Image (tube, rainbow, N blue to C red; front, top):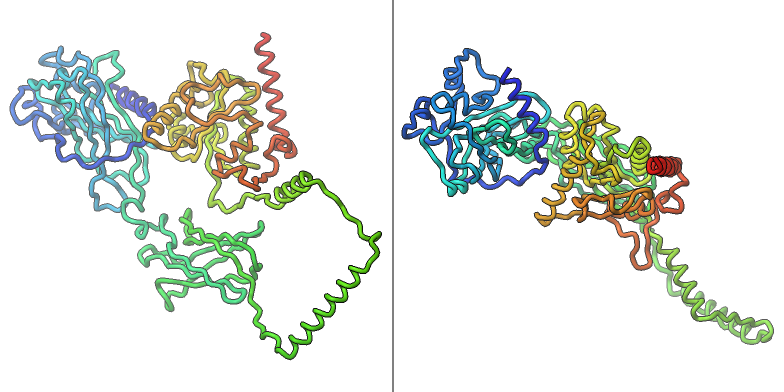
Length: 577
């Protein structure tokens, strides 16, 4: 029962850990590594057992267990269990959580897994009563855990200067590539009614390409060298083939232009060339820009993007002979003279002059130039930007309906891949609301927070698996603060309000991010999502169904406007009550 309670407590700690992924630092050569020593040496305070690893055998002997502990060498409140028999007072002091938690990768011969080692520093607060550390590795998508316990010998007392010392764990081997884990380092002892005893972080193991190089990974490999050559009206594309050890035998490519896409399956003849292959693209339109992708014919294969323009064919011709050019030239001169004479001898009454004011002429020229210089946004982005929309359900179902209609409109008319918790109830059930938001924040290109009066209102509980809005604001505010302190671009994070909300509804945690009023600023929001300028000298971006004047033309825009009116009405009725 104690083990189950401890596992539940640790999972709770992991779920509410920070989502920030720190960069891994260099290996520390001066770090203190664990020693092999017995519990007897630790309890008696002998030499050679200053910082000791506790093995499963030691734990089983101390607790009288005969089976292997599910959590490895860790037990709930290990100080009371292992050190408190001789002196219960040794485990009743407060010790603050460790600091500077880092994860380093170790060499691992297995190409499908990673080995890591965790390092940290003890806090100077309560360090004189510190008895050891407990390190836990918990996968976010599973229930299994790896745990290591390290204890100091009984008579060892650390001073405040030891807070600059770095302590290391033993290696955690066999972690599958591309997996996310929660790392927790706990200071021992852990008295009751003490919350700041641990430090957690989320980290990811490396991908196959990061560890082994993408030439060794089927899912990460893609053609790196693509050459395009035009002969007549035919485009020949040459690309490098995958290494034989990956077992890739077929490829595909598709090209798009003017809303039309052409798909081609490619089966190279390895008896002719085992390193490169060429294929032809026919029936292409002259003067047209084509956007193409090529990839291995595998599930979720990485794709190589390339572009080309079909140049008009040059028609060969021989120049006219001088015997033909001279008569043609004389004829042209004669026609010019005749026309000039006729025009100069016409009656003056037939010559009508049109006077235009200079300012009107300039205005006409500017209007004509603006019309001619309209810039249509090119559709050559490899994939639409991924946008996570965060909001509060404390403002009632009408406000939630507005958020849903906004997500549908942006996905349909703003070339954006929208992520909304209401659309992924299965993912939230599998990962948990906090882990779901942590993962989506890291995966998304942009995060848009819809601000309203209920956003920072504490609900006290979770409804329908959704995250408490106050926790969500704190989480995103922490990410914004880290990005600012690290000197990173803050354009990933945005805040927005609808017409029935006010600027004061935007939390102070989001004071540094761009803010928009919807639906007035839909064009500005589109500009930030796609990193394009709306206006340049003589040019402007033209996007249908997004401007404030015509966004209601579409069905999605009408639905959004109707939802906004319903929410405004609900807000007014709530105020009157």
